[in-house]
Image (cartoon, rainbow, N blue to C red; front, side):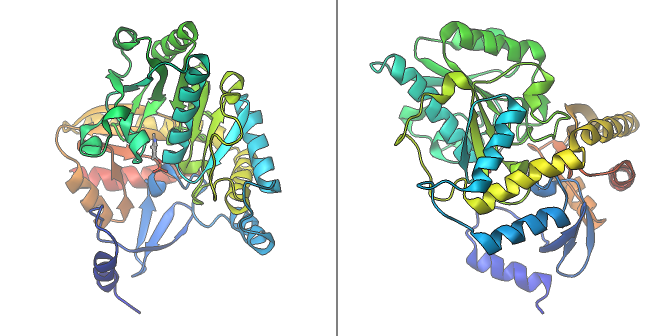
Length: 395
Ligand SMILES: *Cc1c(COP(=O)(O)O)cnc(C)c1O
Protein backbone atom coordinates (compact mmCIF):
# COMPACT_ATOMS: atom_id res chain seq x y z
CA UNK A 1 0.00 0.00 0.00
CA UNK A 2 1.27 3.44 -0.92
CA UNK A 3 1.54 6.26 1.57
CA UNK A 4 -0.42 9.44 0.95
CA UNK A 5 2.77 11.19 -0.03
CA UNK A 6 3.55 8.59 -2.67
CA UNK A 7 0.09 8.98 -4.16
CA UNK A 8 0.42 12.76 -4.19
CA UNK A 9 3.81 12.59 -5.86
CA UNK A 10 2.40 10.32 -8.56
CA UNK A 11 -0.57 12.65 -8.98
CA UNK A 12 1.76 15.59 -9.55
CA UNK A 13 3.70 13.52 -12.06
CA UNK A 14 0.73 12.58 -14.23
CA UNK A 15 -2.18 15.01 -13.71
CA UNK A 16 -2.08 18.39 -15.43
CA UNK A 17 -1.44 21.01 -12.81
CA UNK A 18 -4.44 23.31 -13.04
CA UNK A 19 -5.10 23.02 -9.30
CA UNK A 20 -3.08 23.64 -6.17
CA UNK A 21 -4.51 20.70 -4.31
CA UNK A 22 -4.75 20.19 -0.56
CA UNK A 23 -2.27 17.62 0.74
CA UNK A 24 -4.73 14.81 1.20
CA UNK A 25 -5.84 11.76 -0.78
CA UNK A 26 -9.49 11.06 -0.06
CA UNK A 27 -10.57 7.48 -0.33
CA UNK A 28 -14.06 6.86 0.98
CA UNK A 29 -16.96 8.39 2.82
CA UNK A 30 -19.81 7.63 5.16
CA UNK A 31 -22.62 10.13 5.70
CA UNK A 32 -20.96 13.53 6.19
CA UNK A 33 -17.55 12.06 7.02
CA UNK A 34 -14.66 11.40 4.68
CA UNK A 35 -11.58 9.22 5.15
CA UNK A 36 -8.16 9.64 3.58
CA UNK A 37 -5.93 6.77 2.46
CA UNK A 38 -4.23 6.78 5.87
CA UNK A 39 -7.58 6.26 7.56
CA UNK A 40 -7.87 9.77 9.03
CA UNK A 41 -11.48 10.92 9.46
CA UNK A 42 -12.81 14.33 8.37
CA UNK A 43 -16.10 16.11 8.95
CA UNK A 44 -17.01 17.38 5.50
CA UNK A 45 -18.53 20.83 5.12
CA UNK A 46 -17.68 21.09 1.43
CA UNK A 47 -19.53 18.08 -0.06
CA UNK A 48 -17.25 17.95 -3.10
CA UNK A 49 -18.26 21.60 -3.71
CA UNK A 50 -21.98 21.40 -3.04
CA UNK A 51 -22.36 18.08 -4.84
CA UNK A 52 -22.90 15.30 -2.31
CA UNK A 53 -26.27 16.45 -0.98
CA UNK A 54 -27.26 12.97 0.23
CA UNK A 55 -23.94 12.35 1.91
CA UNK A 56 -21.55 9.55 1.17
CA UNK A 57 -22.45 5.90 0.84
CA UNK A 58 -26.22 6.24 0.75
CA UNK A 59 -27.24 2.65 0.29
CA UNK A 60 -30.44 3.19 -1.65
CA UNK A 61 -28.69 5.56 -4.05
CA UNK A 62 -25.77 3.17 -4.50
CA UNK A 63 -28.08 0.24 -5.14
CA UNK A 64 -30.00 2.16 -7.80
CA UNK A 65 -26.73 2.78 -9.61
CA UNK A 66 -25.61 -0.83 -9.26
CA UNK A 67 -28.92 -2.01 -10.72
CA UNK A 68 -28.55 0.37 -13.63
CA UNK A 69 -25.00 -0.85 -14.30
CA UNK A 70 -26.36 -4.36 -14.65
CA UNK A 71 -28.97 -3.19 -17.17
CA UNK A 72 -27.21 -0.64 -19.39
CA UNK A 73 -24.83 2.26 -18.88
CA UNK A 74 -25.21 4.08 -22.12
CA UNK A 75 -27.36 4.09 -25.22
CA UNK A 76 -27.31 7.33 -27.22
CA UNK A 77 -29.67 10.24 -27.57
CA UNK A 78 -30.71 8.70 -30.88
CA UNK A 79 -32.89 6.41 -28.76
CA UNK A 80 -35.19 6.84 -25.78
CA UNK A 81 -34.20 5.46 -22.39
CA UNK A 82 -36.41 5.05 -19.32
CA UNK A 83 -34.21 6.70 -16.62
CA UNK A 84 -33.86 9.88 -18.70
CA UNK A 85 -37.61 10.08 -19.26
CA UNK A 86 -38.32 9.55 -15.56
CA UNK A 87 -35.67 12.03 -14.43
CA UNK A 88 -36.84 14.71 -16.87
CA UNK A 89 -40.44 14.22 -15.74
CA UNK A 90 -39.41 14.76 -12.11
CA UNK A 91 -37.55 17.98 -12.96
CA UNK A 92 -40.45 19.32 -15.03
CA UNK A 93 -43.08 18.46 -12.42
CA UNK A 94 -41.13 19.96 -9.52
CA UNK A 95 -40.07 23.12 -11.37
CA UNK A 96 -43.23 23.86 -13.31
CA UNK A 97 -41.02 24.39 -16.35
CA UNK A 98 -41.46 22.73 -19.74
CA UNK A 99 -38.52 20.71 -21.10
CA UNK A 100 -35.16 19.33 -19.94
CA UNK A 101 -31.87 18.82 -21.76
CA UNK A 102 -29.32 16.71 -19.83
CA UNK A 103 -25.65 17.60 -19.96
CA UNK A 104 -22.48 16.21 -18.35
CA UNK A 105 -21.62 19.25 -16.25
CA UNK A 106 -22.71 22.65 -15.04
CA UNK A 107 -20.62 24.37 -17.67
CA UNK A 108 -22.41 22.52 -20.42
CA UNK A 109 -25.77 23.36 -18.88
CA UNK A 110 -24.78 27.03 -19.10
CA UNK A 111 -23.59 26.63 -22.69
CA UNK A 112 -26.95 25.16 -23.61
CA UNK A 113 -28.87 27.86 -21.77
CA UNK A 114 -26.92 30.57 -23.63
CA UNK A 115 -27.65 28.85 -26.93
CA UNK A 116 -31.37 28.81 -26.15
CA UNK A 117 -31.37 32.58 -25.55
CA UNK A 118 -29.38 33.25 -28.71
CA UNK A 119 -31.63 31.07 -30.80
CA UNK A 120 -34.74 32.66 -29.32
CA UNK A 121 -33.42 36.06 -30.38
CA UNK A 122 -32.23 34.77 -33.75
CA UNK A 123 -35.67 33.41 -34.64
CA UNK A 124 -37.12 36.86 -34.00
CA UNK A 125 -34.45 38.77 -35.96
CA UNK A 126 -31.55 36.97 -37.60
CA UNK A 127 -29.89 40.18 -38.78
CA UNK A 128 -28.60 41.23 -35.36
CA UNK A 129 -25.57 40.60 -33.23
CA UNK A 130 -26.42 39.42 -29.74
CA UNK A 131 -24.94 40.01 -26.36
CA UNK A 132 -25.65 38.89 -22.81
CA UNK A 133 -25.84 40.87 -19.63
CA UNK A 134 -24.08 39.00 -16.83
CA UNK A 135 -23.07 39.97 -13.30
CA UNK A 136 -19.80 41.05 -11.73
CA UNK A 137 -18.27 38.35 -9.49
CA UNK A 138 -20.37 35.69 -11.17
CA UNK A 139 -19.17 32.20 -11.97
CA UNK A 140 -20.71 30.07 -14.70
CA UNK A 141 -18.00 27.61 -15.77
CA UNK A 142 -14.80 27.20 -17.75
CA UNK A 143 -15.77 26.67 -21.37
CA UNK A 144 -15.31 29.69 -23.61
CA UNK A 145 -19.02 30.47 -23.68
CA UNK A 146 -19.54 30.01 -19.93
CA UNK A 147 -16.36 31.99 -19.23
CA UNK A 148 -17.67 34.80 -21.42
CA UNK A 149 -20.46 35.44 -18.87
CA UNK A 150 -18.25 34.80 -15.82
CA UNK A 151 -17.62 38.19 -14.22
CA UNK A 152 -14.19 37.53 -12.82
CA UNK A 153 -11.02 38.59 -14.63
CA UNK A 154 -9.04 35.90 -12.84
CA UNK A 155 -10.94 33.17 -14.70
CA UNK A 156 -11.44 35.04 -17.98
CA UNK A 157 -7.98 36.37 -18.70
CA UNK A 158 -6.56 35.05 -21.93
CA UNK A 159 -9.44 32.72 -22.69
CA UNK A 160 -12.53 34.64 -23.80
CA UNK A 161 -12.82 35.18 -27.55
CA UNK A 162 -13.59 38.79 -28.47
CA UNK A 163 -16.84 37.96 -30.22
CA UNK A 164 -18.17 36.30 -27.07
CA UNK A 165 -17.63 39.15 -24.61
CA UNK A 166 -20.62 39.90 -22.41
CA UNK A 167 -21.66 43.13 -20.70
CA UNK A 168 -21.31 43.06 -16.91
CA UNK A 169 -23.55 44.72 -14.38
CA UNK A 170 -23.36 45.01 -10.63
CA UNK A 171 -25.20 42.20 -8.86
CA UNK A 172 -28.35 43.33 -7.04
CA UNK A 173 -28.19 46.71 -8.80
CA UNK A 174 -31.21 46.92 -11.07
CA UNK A 175 -30.45 50.43 -12.33
CA UNK A 176 -27.06 49.25 -13.52
CA UNK A 177 -28.65 46.36 -15.42
CA UNK A 178 -31.28 48.65 -16.95
CA UNK A 179 -28.59 51.08 -18.10
CA UNK A 180 -26.81 48.25 -19.93
CA UNK A 181 -29.73 46.77 -21.82
CA UNK A 182 -29.52 47.53 -25.55
CA UNK A 183 -31.20 46.28 -28.72
CA UNK A 184 -28.50 43.64 -28.87
CA UNK A 185 -29.27 42.14 -25.46
CA UNK A 186 -30.63 38.62 -25.94
CA UNK A 187 -30.56 37.44 -22.35
CA UNK A 188 -29.69 38.16 -18.75
CA UNK A 189 -27.89 35.51 -16.75
CA UNK A 190 -27.33 35.40 -13.01
CA UNK A 191 -26.92 33.05 -10.08
CA UNK A 192 -29.79 33.23 -7.60
CA UNK A 193 -27.13 33.06 -4.89
CA UNK A 194 -23.62 33.85 -6.10
CA UNK A 195 -21.38 30.96 -5.04
CA UNK A 196 -17.74 31.33 -6.11
CA UNK A 197 -18.13 35.11 -5.91
CA UNK A 198 -18.46 34.94 -2.12
CA UNK A 199 -22.00 33.70 -1.22
CA UNK A 200 -24.21 36.67 -2.11
CA UNK A 201 -27.97 36.00 -2.26
CA UNK A 202 -29.97 38.03 -4.77
CA UNK A 203 -32.54 40.44 -3.42
CA UNK A 204 -36.18 39.88 -4.27
CA UNK A 205 -36.44 43.30 -5.94
CA UNK A 206 -33.47 42.47 -8.14
CA UNK A 207 -34.85 39.19 -9.46
CA UNK A 208 -38.32 40.70 -9.89
CA UNK A 209 -36.78 43.59 -11.79
CA UNK A 210 -34.79 41.27 -14.06
CA UNK A 211 -37.99 39.37 -14.80
CA UNK A 212 -39.71 42.60 -15.70
CA UNK A 213 -36.90 43.76 -18.00
CA UNK A 214 -36.85 40.42 -19.80
CA UNK A 215 -40.63 40.48 -20.25
CA UNK A 216 -40.56 44.05 -21.57
CA UNK A 217 -37.78 43.28 -24.05
CA UNK A 218 -38.94 39.74 -24.87
CA UNK A 219 -35.51 38.35 -24.03
CA UNK A 220 -34.68 35.34 -21.85
CA UNK A 221 -33.89 35.29 -18.16
CA UNK A 222 -31.40 32.57 -17.24
CA UNK A 223 -30.92 31.50 -13.64
CA UNK A 224 -27.77 29.56 -12.88
CA UNK A 225 -28.79 27.20 -10.08
CA UNK A 226 -25.85 24.87 -10.57
CA UNK A 227 -24.70 25.49 -6.99
CA UNK A 228 -27.68 27.05 -5.22
CA UNK A 229 -30.32 24.71 -6.64
CA UNK A 230 -31.38 21.20 -5.63
CA UNK A 231 -32.54 22.06 -2.14
CA UNK A 232 -29.38 23.78 -1.00
CA UNK A 233 -31.07 27.08 -0.14
CA UNK A 234 -34.09 25.61 1.62
CA UNK A 235 -36.38 25.21 -1.37
CA UNK A 236 -35.92 22.66 -4.14
CA UNK A 237 -35.00 25.43 -6.58
CA UNK A 238 -33.54 28.62 -5.13
CA UNK A 239 -35.78 30.85 -7.24
CA UNK A 240 -38.84 29.31 -5.54
CA UNK A 241 -37.88 31.31 -2.45
CA UNK A 242 -38.30 34.50 -4.47
CA UNK A 243 -41.40 33.65 -6.48
CA UNK A 244 -39.60 34.67 -9.69
CA UNK A 245 -39.51 32.23 -12.61
CA UNK A 246 -36.67 32.05 -15.12
CA UNK A 247 -37.06 31.18 -18.81
CA UNK A 248 -34.09 28.85 -18.54
CA UNK A 249 -32.52 27.30 -15.46
CA UNK A 250 -29.16 25.53 -15.28
CA UNK A 251 -28.66 22.68 -12.80
CA UNK A 252 -25.72 20.38 -11.99
CA UNK A 253 -23.65 19.80 -8.82
CA UNK A 254 -26.20 18.10 -6.51
CA UNK A 255 -28.44 17.03 -9.40
CA UNK A 256 -26.69 13.66 -9.60
CA UNK A 257 -25.17 13.70 -6.11
CA UNK A 258 -21.80 12.51 -7.37
CA UNK A 259 -22.51 11.24 -10.87
CA UNK A 260 -21.40 13.87 -13.40
CA UNK A 261 -24.62 15.29 -14.75
CA UNK A 262 -26.19 18.67 -15.39
CA UNK A 263 -29.28 19.95 -17.13
CA UNK A 264 -30.76 23.06 -18.60
CA UNK A 265 -34.46 23.39 -18.13
CA UNK A 266 -36.56 25.59 -20.40
CA UNK A 267 -39.90 27.17 -19.64
CA UNK A 268 -42.65 27.06 -22.25
CA UNK A 269 -41.59 30.29 -23.96
CA UNK A 270 -37.99 29.15 -24.41
CA UNK A 271 -38.44 25.45 -25.04
CA UNK A 272 -39.49 25.90 -28.67
CA UNK A 273 -36.32 27.80 -29.58
CA UNK A 274 -34.18 24.71 -30.09
CA UNK A 275 -35.26 22.22 -32.75
CA UNK A 276 -33.77 18.86 -33.83
CA UNK A 277 -30.17 19.39 -34.89
CA UNK A 278 -29.64 22.55 -32.83
CA UNK A 279 -27.96 20.88 -29.88
CA UNK A 280 -26.68 17.47 -28.87
CA UNK A 281 -24.35 15.40 -26.72
CA UNK A 282 -23.12 11.81 -26.76
CA UNK A 283 -23.16 11.14 -23.03
CA UNK A 284 -25.63 13.72 -21.77
CA UNK A 285 -28.72 12.10 -20.26
CA UNK A 286 -27.38 8.59 -20.48
CA UNK A 287 -29.21 5.95 -18.43
CA UNK A 288 -26.52 5.73 -15.76
CA UNK A 289 -26.43 9.46 -15.04
CA UNK A 290 -30.18 9.89 -15.20
CA UNK A 291 -30.83 6.84 -13.00
CA UNK A 292 -28.83 8.80 -10.41
CA UNK A 293 -30.90 11.95 -10.98
CA UNK A 294 -34.13 10.04 -10.72
CA UNK A 295 -33.08 8.40 -7.46
CA UNK A 296 -31.90 11.72 -6.07
CA UNK A 297 -35.41 13.14 -6.52
CA UNK A 298 -36.96 10.08 -4.84
CA UNK A 299 -34.59 10.33 -1.89
CA UNK A 300 -35.17 14.07 -1.52
CA UNK A 301 -38.83 13.18 -1.14
CA UNK A 302 -38.48 10.19 1.22
CA UNK A 303 -35.81 11.85 3.38
CA UNK A 304 -37.67 15.19 3.32
CA UNK A 305 -34.42 16.93 2.43
CA UNK A 306 -35.87 20.39 1.78
CA UNK A 307 -37.62 20.84 5.17
CA UNK A 308 -34.49 19.42 6.80
CA UNK A 309 -32.32 22.04 5.06
CA UNK A 310 -34.61 24.80 6.31
CA UNK A 311 -34.28 23.58 9.87
CA UNK A 312 -30.56 22.84 9.98
CA UNK A 313 -29.83 25.87 7.78
CA UNK A 314 -31.48 28.11 10.38
CA UNK A 315 -29.48 26.42 13.12
CA UNK A 316 -26.23 26.90 11.20
CA UNK A 317 -27.17 30.54 10.64
CA UNK A 318 -27.57 31.12 14.35
CA UNK A 319 -24.31 29.37 15.21
CA UNK A 320 -22.30 31.26 12.58
CA UNK A 321 -23.83 34.53 13.78
CA UNK A 322 -22.63 33.74 17.33
CA UNK A 323 -19.18 32.88 15.99
CA UNK A 324 -19.08 36.24 14.22
CA UNK A 325 -20.08 38.03 17.42
CA UNK A 326 -17.21 36.31 19.22
CA UNK A 327 -14.40 36.98 16.74
CA UNK A 328 -13.53 40.46 15.46
CA UNK A 329 -11.79 39.01 12.41
CA UNK A 330 -15.18 37.86 11.04
CA UNK A 331 -16.75 40.84 9.30
CA UNK A 332 -19.85 39.48 7.55
CA UNK A 333 -22.16 36.48 7.40
CA UNK A 334 -24.43 35.78 4.40
CA UNK A 335 -26.37 32.99 2.81
CA UNK A 336 -29.52 30.90 2.57
CA UNK A 337 -30.26 27.40 3.82
CA UNK A 338 -27.12 25.29 3.76
CA UNK A 339 -25.25 27.69 1.48
CA UNK A 340 -23.63 30.20 3.81
CA UNK A 341 -20.48 32.24 3.92
CA UNK A 342 -18.40 33.92 6.61
CA UNK A 343 -16.32 36.84 5.43
CA UNK A 344 -13.06 37.48 7.28
CA UNK A 345 -10.95 40.64 7.33
CA UNK A 346 -8.06 38.74 5.73
CA UNK A 347 -7.45 35.63 3.56
CA UNK A 348 -8.89 32.40 4.98
CA UNK A 349 -6.37 29.95 3.49
CA UNK A 350 -4.59 29.34 6.79
CA UNK A 351 -7.80 28.73 8.72
CA UNK A 352 -8.86 26.16 6.15
CA UNK A 353 -5.51 24.34 6.36
CA UNK A 354 -5.59 24.29 10.15
CA UNK A 355 -9.18 23.06 10.17
CA UNK A 356 -8.16 20.25 7.87
CA UNK A 357 -5.40 19.32 10.31
CA UNK A 358 -8.08 19.00 12.97
CA UNK A 359 -10.29 16.85 10.76
CA UNK A 360 -12.66 19.43 9.27
CA UNK A 361 -12.97 20.02 5.54
CA UNK A 362 -13.92 23.58 4.57
CA UNK A 363 -13.61 25.51 1.32
CA UNK A 364 -13.32 29.18 0.49
CA UNK A 365 -15.25 31.32 -1.97
CA UNK A 366 -12.84 33.99 -3.10
CA UNK A 367 -9.95 34.85 -0.77
CA UNK A 368 -11.67 36.10 2.39
CA UNK A 369 -14.80 33.98 2.60
CA UNK A 370 -15.26 30.53 4.08
CA UNK A 371 -18.12 28.80 2.33
CA UNK A 372 -20.32 26.31 4.16
CA UNK A 373 -21.94 23.86 1.74
CA UNK A 374 -22.18 20.56 3.68
CA UNK A 375 -24.10 17.50 2.58
CA UNK A 376 -27.77 18.41 3.03
CA UNK A 377 -28.29 15.50 5.45
CA UNK A 378 -26.01 17.20 8.00
CA UNK A 379 -27.41 17.30 11.55
CA UNK A 380 -27.39 19.97 14.26
CA UNK A 381 -24.89 17.87 16.24
CA UNK A 382 -22.55 17.91 13.25
CA UNK A 383 -23.00 21.67 12.94
CA UNK A 384 -21.93 21.91 16.60
CA UNK A 385 -18.93 19.69 15.90
CA UNK A 386 -17.92 21.93 12.98
CA UNK A 387 -18.38 25.13 15.01
CA UNK A 388 -16.26 23.68 17.83
CA UNK A 389 -13.34 22.95 15.52
CA UNK A 390 -13.62 26.24 13.62
CA UNK A 391 -13.84 28.25 16.83
CA UNK A 392 -10.67 26.66 18.19
CA UNK A 393 -8.84 27.19 14.90
CA UNK A 394 -9.78 30.90 14.74
CA UNK A 395 -8.76 31.39 18.37
C1 LIG B 1 -19.73 24.89 -10.39
C2 LIG B 1 -20.53 25.90 -11.10
C3 LIG B 1 -20.63 25.92 -12.51
C4 LIG B 1 -19.83 24.99 -13.38
O1 LIG B 1 -20.19 23.66 -13.20
P1 LIG B 1 -19.17 22.50 -13.62
O2 LIG B 1 -19.92 21.24 -13.32
O3 LIG B 1 -17.93 22.67 -12.82
O4 LIG B 1 -18.92 22.62 -15.08
C5 LIG B 1 -21.47 26.85 -13.09
N1 LIG B 1 -22.16 27.72 -12.35
C6 LIG B 1 -22.10 27.74 -11.00
C7 LIG B 1 -22.92 28.72 -10.23
C8 LIG B 1 -21.27 26.85 -10.34
O5 LIG B 1 -21.18 26.89 -9.00
